[in-house]
Image (tube, rainbow, N blue to C red; front, top):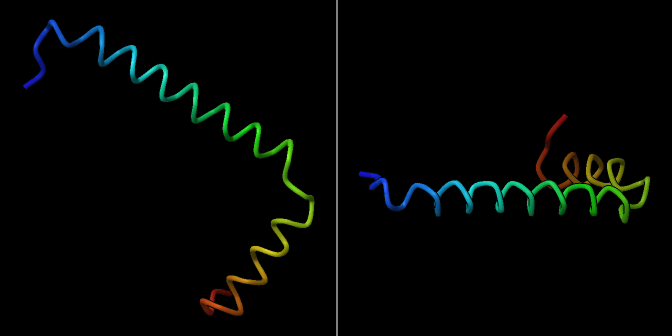
Amino acid sequence: MLISVDLPAVIFLGVYGEFINQWSFFRGLQTADPTTPILTGFLAVCLMGFR
């Protein structure tokens, strides 16, 4: 059960966690090579049998 005293900490940690998640995602987009999706798809087909 969530105690009302903990509510500000939960909200802060949720916002902070979402910020870190989005920042990491956009940082990854900036540093990823354009061939990464092609390589990922190729490896998925070869190693895991996805089509």
